[in-house]
Image (cartoon, rainbow, N blue to C red):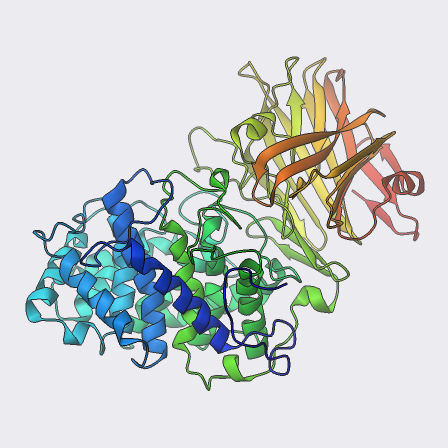
Length: 626
């Protein structure tokens, strides 16, 4: 696919047979984004006030965000070129520092106060200043340096939110230490000690307390500790060695999250950061701890960047809109302002590696899903990853991440609590669609159609090709909760999903498959015990009733609800008039770019339920006992 809004160098299919991209493509993409911001700069370049919905922090904070996050990108571009980048780029960001820290300039940055959004942005500025020190910090007027230090000093002894924000304080105060300014070692040690409480093993952190697993693990929890280590000059007390070992463990399976078209699995919050999903693989190379071959590192990162570029990101203005491809606000959060997407800058960390580094000079290697079908169990987050070589689609089966606190009220969230996500689909997130909660969900329906919610998820097992969990479904309109225990098993391109459901008498049970979306209305088709939805590009989502469902199936359609396109559809099954007590429901879930014939699948797959045992037999003779 061509890049609709970006002029790129010629592809190099010898060095990069899979993407065609080289370092020159990354530089061109960085330069286009940085140049496109200039018309939106305030006169002194301290803020970039971009068009789009403001965040809850207000226009001045959003303007600072525009400066800070784009400065991170500029710093990688400047340092990666050993200062030989466009001198106007250096001048713009140096001038922004001068103006932003001048309280009488009319463009002054908000002061750093406890738990303020400015803390997030300060961390990007601290990293940028460290990486560009010979070209920016060392050449600043002493009075400006003092003002910058004064602004950063708001961190010292300050309070942050108790999650990845602790690391913003760590890197910012380490910058103060690196320039000989007052700082608190207790703040730095406290933040680094705190993330130890969130380390689960196998390279996996949670983002704060609870089962908060998403891309923040890669672009925050692994990233900032190793960026901090770069600031210490080697005086890290042995921590960096631990961080490198953990990142190496994390990266061993990270390529399994990316589809053959370069897309990352669409799961979690802040997905508008897009290219930032490549940050941990670049960090592994930068910290010399990656288990990935240099050619695989570049293939993953370039594939992800190219995926978005070919789908119109950046847009015709050169800007990164709030969304996944184009603007799509339901996929964002209230803290996301018009400059928030520029945390994508983290995905350009590879520019710090010299042009003769193996990640830039060695031949690209294929992603796991490009070599063979993949089944990857990740017990810490409670996920199964399932990639199929023939269509390049990767699916994530979720039995562990819910983004809820350890205690107190739990909430359902479309970016975390669905049973499945993928590289080719997104959850339905517009308010009306979320009220219906059809896709990727097992619901108990009240008489008015209101669905129960998947609240706190309790992982039970995750190994091989099988994972299981339990959640309590609150029946709509009551305080009563009912346990639902679910086991997922992978076979070929399919997921077999078994639910043991306790429900009130008369309730309807409903299961939804993946939502598929397109520019045109997906084709929908139903038959006895099955339903499918298919896009014009051939992506098919299907559900097949194997046990416990009514013969009548259906499809739920939505408009402007999905990050992948304006028209979306989800196949579904129902079982009306629950008898009360326990029931068992077995479903085949399919998502494929290949032909799917759900009628043939239903006729050729047998399922027998005997008490607590479910046996599924496939046409090839394979039998699953669950």
